[in-house]
Image 1 (tube, helix red, strand yellow):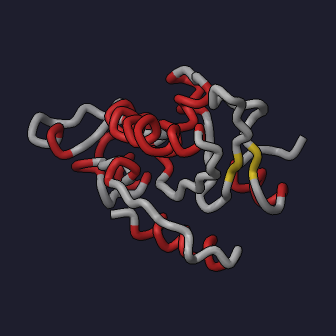
Image 2 (cartoon, rainbow, N blue to C red; image 1 turned 180 degrees about the vertical axis):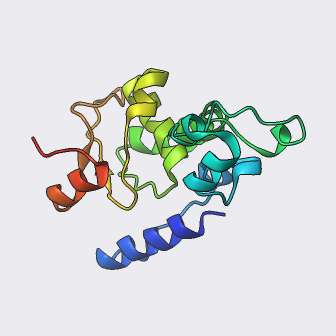
Length: 167
């Protein structure tokens, strides 16, 4: 259940006085399930699995036991779960000329960004999508980005949230 994403969406819709817009909810945009790592912060993960593993952005190289595997997802699994919703629901609406607002969690959003921009595994892992900072894509008729994603709101806040120095 996307409680945080749903509440964020409600806040955004209220701020722009658009609470009447239809909302579609789907499990496909849920956050990645970390299985045995769910609820652990980086320090706890480092203590259990080592500093190198805890510092990996997606904890994807941790050697989980067989009993943990069915209860977790890799980033690849999360992307495979999110993309059908993009292809079957979001893509057709945008093709019809509708504007679509997506409120979701980081890993499912990374999957959509990876797909839109054709990013490699290395590039998507290096990408930082700051929590709570909306982004906008301008797409061409084939739904390919015309320019890179644009962060909305205060640029300094978005840059700081990305952990990058302002150019």
